[in-house]
Image (cartoon, rainbow, N blue to C red; front, side, top):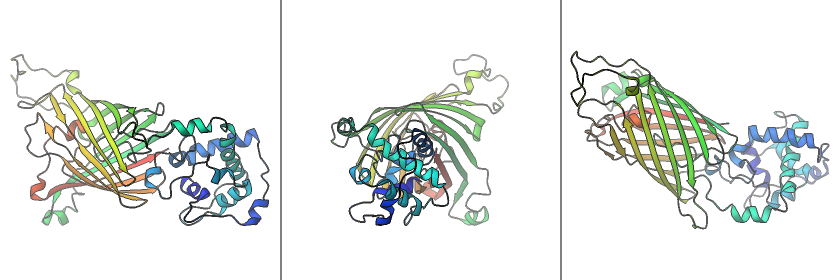
Length: 395
C-alpha cells in the first residue's frame, strides 16, 4: 500500500495525471466521520511505514524508496479531486499495486476520505509544523545495521519483528561445497520483537539460540540531525540486559574465583549488560555513517578475560538504488585478548515498504553484541567467514 501511495502525487519529472473522467467520480462517504475512522485504520496497517504517522512522507522505510513517499499536506496532493485519488489508488502504476481487487470500493473511498482529512484538520497549524519539522529523515533504514545498533527508532504506534540467522563457519576450500557454505553446520538464530513507546523511544525483547539467551533492550533518540545543520548529527542511547538460561559449563573441583574464594555459580553470573552511545550523520541521500561507543559487562568471565570490554563499531550504508544498499561494519575492541576485530558486510534489499532482507558475510557466528565483541572471530586473513541473513518487518 505504501509503495502505491508514493505515486499518488507523482513528481515533476514523471507526473501522473488521472483521466478527466476520474474527476467526475463522487465520493459517497465524503466528510463522513465513520469513513475517516475506517481510513485511519487502513492507513495505520498499510501506509505508516513509508508515509509516517502524520502522513508527511517521513516513514521509517522512506529512505530506501524513489520517488520519495507523498506528503499528504502538499498542494500537489490536496488539489486533486477525490475521484482522481480514488482512480489512482484503484488502478496503480508500475511497481505500485492497484487495489481495485484487493480493497473493497467502500474501503478505497474511506482511505481517500482519511487522506484528504489530514490537511483539513491541520490547515491552520501547517506553516508552523512545516517550519519546525526540518529534521533529517531515516539516517538508516532500520533499527539495526548488521550486528550493531543504529540511531533509528520506530515510528509511534508501530512495532518491528526481526530474525537474525548465522550459519556455521566456512572457507574458500573443499568444505565450502561439502558443507554447503556452512549451512550443514550448527547455526545460530535470534528472534526479536520491538515496540515503539513514543516517536523517540522503543523497547525490544529477544531470544538467541547460542547460550539460550533472553535479552531486553531499550533505545532513546536524544538528538535528531536537521536539514539546515543546526543539529549536524543524530545521537541515541541504547541499553540491553541479557540472561543466559543454558546450563553452566562444568568446572574442575576446587576451582576458585580470582580473589581465592571457593567458586560457586550464582544467578548473577548469567547476566550481561550492554550500554551504547550511537552517533550518526546522514551525509547525503546515498550515504550514512555512524560510530558507536559500546560498554559490555559480563558478571562472570573465564580466566584471562576482562569483565568490562569496550568496542567502537564503525558502520555505514551506501545506497545503490531505490531498493538496495551496501552495509559495512568494523569494530575495534579494547580490553580483549583476541587480535582480530569483527568485520561484516551486507547486501540489503528493501523488498517492500516495511520489509528488508540482508544477506551477510561476517567474521562471527554470534549475534548479540555482548557476544560479538567478547568472543574470538574467525580468521578472515585465511578466508574463513560466516554467511547469514537478517530479516526485518515493520508493522
